[in-house]
Length: 175
Image 1 (cartoon, helix red, strand yellow):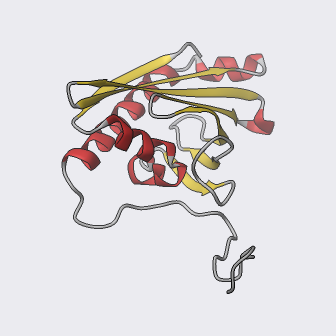
Image 2: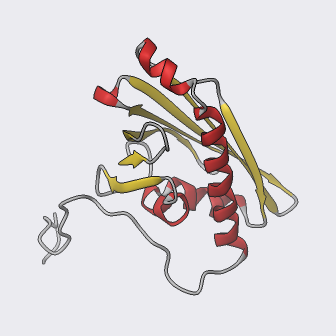
């Protein structure tokens, strides 16, 4: 799929917006309308190596995906790479760029994939670009709403599947 780009201006400091986007566990609060069954792949949800697995709830071909942060240049850029679809044949990328301008932040997200086989490329040709553009636009508007209109209740967060914090090992500290 050719790159799909969406952008929005958020009235918040760039460092705050970057910290929120870089925390993979917070994605549920603003991307849950098209990403279902969202689970973290490791306990630490921030930084290079942080990732999540989820179901992309597209209308024609719902698919499983697993993404991981591969580059993090705070507070400017975040790059994620993932495997999408059956057997992870399709490689997907998401790049977040944040530019500060006069006290606000312009967030640009670019999403693209490299299909593994012709069948995956054919499925993507059936309107996936438009659907992804709409979903990312909705996500960015929800992200702006979180920063500009303070939520009245705590935001949703994702957890690690099967992780019990009360029984986890605490290296160097007492339980």
